Length: 266
Image (cartoon, rainbow, N blue to C red):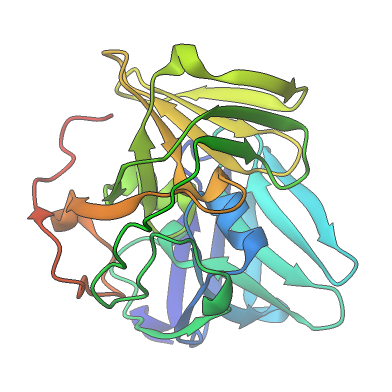
């Protein structure tokens, strides 16, 4: 077996680690509503038969039954979105962002693009901001244990390709700045926070694993675009930390690129 036939991956905090053997399927990006809620943007995954997949550390692994047909695995400590496991198939889908680089994989397919966020272009130039934009944004996790609202529209949406965002979202993140004092909380029974190595805090649901928001060590606050139910009214504006992007995809939408590395933990 060659090195290319063996892969290791983990969540951000290291509480969940796994290994695969043998070849992996090409990466597919899923834009369905469930994947947008859990990842905070859209999810990208490879797949492997269960007999070639093993959990080597599972102290913080939690599963959420997202439908009668499948369950989703995530880290209950840092909130990383890791696995999707169908009940009637002997395989597991693995977040490409959770794999250690180099993966040697390629993103070859986008699925459920009809459910993509209104800001998402699936590789093409981003759509123009709509003439009528929402004045209120309703946000929630997938299971509904966390819900809040804030004034809309979202405005500029920035994608981040740093290693932390890739590990947590399973692909890369997309978020917009917000005034935290304007949030109206409706439910937060499942709200959990993870303090990052750089002193930031990431909010997620500890019941379903959905990514919700990020507060930097300096106090800047941003909301994951995928947490918004319905139109965001925002527009994709820039990619940051592209020097640390995954090796399995290219950035092809002609937006401004900020290429710095995430040498300073966020």
